[in-house]
Image 1: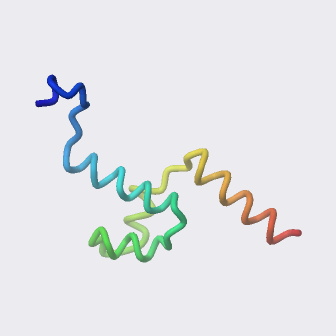
Image 2: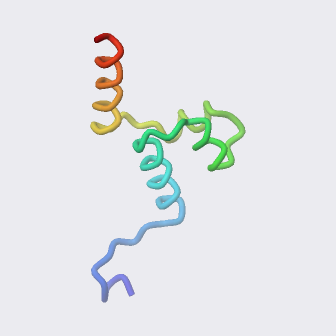
Amino acid sequence: MLAKTNLHHITPHGLRHTHAIMVLESGVDIKYVSTRLGHATVNMTADVYIHITEKYDDRNVDKLDSYLN
C-alpha cells in the first residue's frame, strides 16, 4: 500500500511521538500531555518529548517578552 500511495512508513511509536510533540507545541500543559500518554511522572514526558523546536522556542521567547513588557 505504501508503494502505491507514495507515503512513508511510520510506526505506532512514531505516531505517538509526533502526536506528543504536536500537542506540546500547540501550548497544551505538559501535565495534561503526561496524563494522556500514561506516564507516571511529568519528568518522564519532559525527558522524552520536549524537544526545543523552532516553533516551541519562538512561542516561549514571545511569552517571556510579553511578560517583561
